[in-house]
Every structure is written in structure tokens, then in C-alpha cells.
Length: 475
Image 1: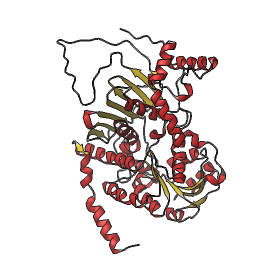
Image 2: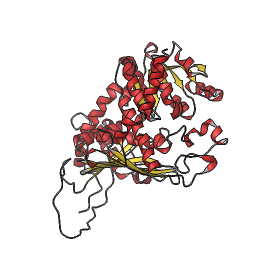
Image 3: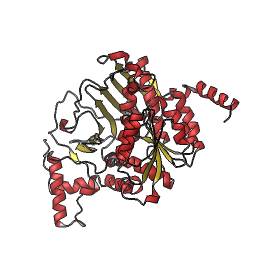
Image 4: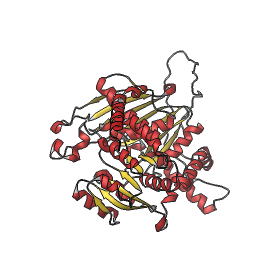
């Protein structure tokens, strides 16, 4: 039977209640590490920080850091003077400028560092920052090579008073937090599949100078994890989070089929399938020849994901952080299958059937700022919220997050550094994500199923050799 696209008032109240657990969870999260902590702070209650790496990502972060009130930028570091000068203008705090990051780490006016250098430098700079006694925020992927997974896993516990956070900002989005609550509370039924994509056109384009131009580092395997590291890592982390564990194995296919300019050796398209415990799966695609995204009525380009369960699905995206913000739409299953995790559905029916459910539009994911409360809201407030929900459901308006999750994750990093809090995107999340990147690229290179427990024996000999060498020459 076709579903009615229009929401009645009763359905609006039901909608608000069905995901009320999600909104409640988000409200609590905001109090301990969400948008609430971005509000004004006293000058003496700011974390003094430095940024190492002021290229495209570092400057992007500085634009958001300028809006975060519980941190104060005292230093910047980059090899390129032009980048340094531009970054100092963006943040506007007259920070000291360094060419050598070790000099910044020795600066006693820096209590925390934000690392936005190319991927192959993440581990050495993170290691040195921890050893220098600094709270450390490192962009994803946290590490580049297998031996660095083991080395950082061993090093981090030696610095228990320092916060180590990874730049996986989806964990700090109210919408992604709400969906996680829905998954945990069974609102979507048994979540069995996640589909994610990041499609660009043309993708990364080689800048003049080829391999000799440092700005082209993403296009070469010696420095970059390619599309898996730079784009896929975000969606892999969300799948780990939603499913509650890392994957068991990965298979994939990648190709350098379109962009072959000036010797690049990373793939320009990848297709990956991850199997998680219980047979759950993440299907991931990244291409560089088309930017279409088949979610949200095709109103958003490039990247997003769909989380699918036996009782419903959610389309969700983080937005570009500039013109568009995170949003999500919830689709109810017209005839939800009642299958519990770990059980088999044994009922069969002879013959083939072909019955399509009626068309439906996604429902806005209930957030605290537009939930209808019949007991507390005034008549005018209820009418305004109902009207907004109706406009969302009609597709005339799209609900969006009120604070950029990049700003939320940075404010949360400073908050945790000052209070001894524990980040949502912590060491375990960062290493699991980096492991997935390393093994995914291996699966595509070797054209085989790669099991995640293989990481335990990868690079161990290099770590052991390094430890022996350090023992001979202690600092």
C-alpha cells in the first residue's frame, strides 16, 4: 500500500518521540564536548596552542579555530614562508612563526599542538609532540605505515596526562551522534549495511612541478594513502562507530585509469567492501570522474552515506563545512522485517514476488531545537516547529546542524586538554582507522581478501629494530 507523504500532527509528535533518545543523547554530548563549549570563555581560560603545517588543511583549520573561543594560537610552523604569513593573517593573533617544528615544540608558550602536515609525517611529529609534553591533535589518518601503528600504540600510554585526539570530526556532529543513538536503541532495526561514497570531478589535479612540488604529495604513494586515506578514512570510521567494532576483512579494486599526469601513482578510483562481525558490511566508493551523490534528492554533491537496517535507513552527510552543513534524512521501512541480530529468517514463500512499496520522502531527523513538546512549548512555538517539520518533510527546507563539527571537535580538544577529558576520536579510533586504510590499499594492490588481524605481524620487525637502536643511544 502506498505511503502518504504528508505528515499529520499526530505523526509529527510520533516522529519527535521515536528518535527522542537520539536527541537526548546529543543534548548530553553537547554539554560535555559539543557546541556549548564554543561560547565565550575568559581570556585566562584558553588553551595556548600551535599549528604545525599551514598548507591547505592547516589554513582551513585556522579559519575555524578563529571562531573557537577556548583556544588561543601562539605559534605557527611551516617550511613555506608564504603559507606561514597567510596563516597568521587568517588566525589574527600575531603568533610566532617557526620553520622547524621542533622549535615550536620547545616553546613554553605552547601547551597543545594541532598537526596538519602531509600524512607521511604524521607519526614522527605526533611522537615528538607527545614526548615534548604537549596535548596533541593530529589530522587523519593518524599514522601511515604498519610499524607506526605498533609504535604509537606503545608510546601513547606513556603519556597518560596528555590528550591525543584525531581529526575524525563526524564523531562530533550532532546528526551523526543522533544516528548512533538510533542504531544503538534499535530505531533502525538490525543495521546490516552501510553504503558510503565520495565522488569528485575532476578530483586531485597535478600542480606544476610534478613530484618536485610539495603540494602534490597526495598523488604519490611515498607520501600519501590516496583516496582511502584522504577521503575514505572518514566513512570507515563512521562504520566502525555505528557497528561497534573494526572490520574483519576487506576486499577491493582500484585503478589509475583516467588521471595519469606527470607520474602520479595513486589510484584515481577505488571500490571497497568491508565485512564486519555478524556479516554486516560497508560498501565504499571513491571516483574522480563524476561528483553525483544519489542521496538527499541529489541536492548535495560528492559525499555522503546511507545507513540501512531492517526497520529503516538514514541518509547522512557532514557537508562541506562552508556553504552546507551536516544533515540527515530518515526513511522508515514500509514493511519492516522482524529479524534480530544473529538470527536467521527462515520463512520462505514459493514463487517470485514483485511488489514495490509506495514512494516516500525522507523525514527530518529530530533535533532538540525543533522537537515538538506539547507540555512545554507555547501554542506559537508548537505551530512554528510543526511548520518547519512540514517544510522539511516536503523537501522545501533541509535541516542542518547549527555549528560546524570541525569547530566542535577543536573546541572539544581544548576542553578535554584543560579538564582531563577523554576525546570521542581517541587513540583507539585513530589507530583502527589507520589500520583500515593500510589494509585496504594492500587488498587492492594484491587483489586479495586481507584480514584485519594481519596488522599484528606487519612492521613489527622495524619497530623492534628501532627500539634496539634507541636503547644503544638513549636521549
